[in-house]
Length: 281
Image 1 (tube, helix red, strand yellow):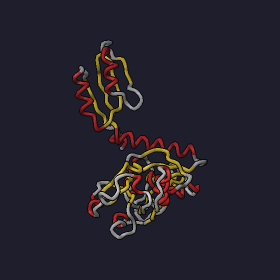
Image 2 (cartoon, rainbow, N blue to C red):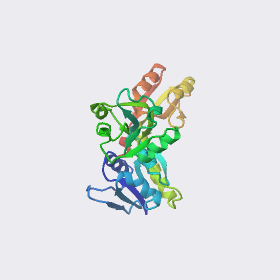
Image 3 (tube, helix red, strand yellow):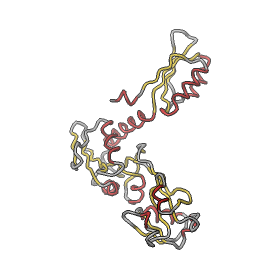
Image 4 (tube, rainbow, N blue to C red):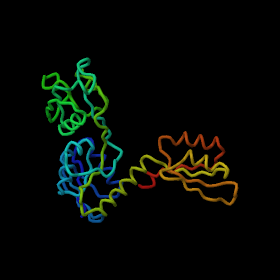
């Protein structure tokens, strides 16, 4: 059985469960379930704290798992990223009082509060900045107000919580994170993990792309393919009328209307859009 660690709560939990379900795996029906066995697919799902998942995967307790890239890097475990999953995006940044710090170099000699001690210490070391890192389990935004630190390093989404504490971000992002599939180096479940990866990739692709079919004059095939390059390359087929070609390609869901407008302008016809995600249900 392939042992997969899944976030048991938090921002990644529901989205990870939805993705596994769309990939054809049996998931828990009750939030109190800690282990789910899917005999049909040969997997066991273990619902664990998101912060602990990389540690379990790295130690070989489980074969693979879903967690945040920030949590993986902070853990320092022997686990490695297999693929990004397209949800749970966040930005990890430094923040401080306006006017007190403006660049990474200004952190030198100061105290930095964070819940990601390993990640921050590594980032500071890579840039040659010496500072005291204060580890907190939560409420990092109030650390400066309470006099615990001079600077904080935390996940930033809208920035509203920081502004409420009179803080602002500075410098380049430490890390851009999202949910990722991770695996243990040297796992003997390589084939099973590859099956999982391909299934998850199918869901990611279906969520972000649609299938576009259209007919175009044979003389404009190259120009049309440049507009719809697809994930790899479009499929071009001959029609009964040799002056026309049929083209099939996957295009980003968000830009479908603009692509269709350009194809119509160049003389394409019979344009058909297929929602790949709907076809998977």
